Length: 132
Image (cartoon, rainbow, N blue to C red; front, side, top):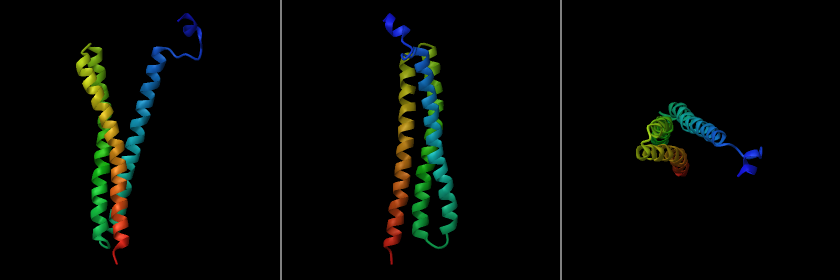
């Protein structure tokens, strides 16, 4: 164990925690960017096709809803993470773990929302192209 402590390649518990915090922060930023940015782009696209292609507009609205839910889930990540931290600090491990699961699930669902939202839009666009 003493050799590990003197090895400069081995991170301390505090350094590992800092790395995890930074990675979580970057994860949420990326999820907000892909879902929120995607939703903003779809709003602009929806305005362009609103009158000319109702079927594609319908699909775009559904994709917009899914991406918006993904953005909300990404935003909820920090709230759940904050609550988990508070409960761990108060030594309420059970609630800390519960909120820990919430923030993990919210990030996972946010990523899934992006994939589903883009899938919905791609499916609608392919159907629109198949129509005579």
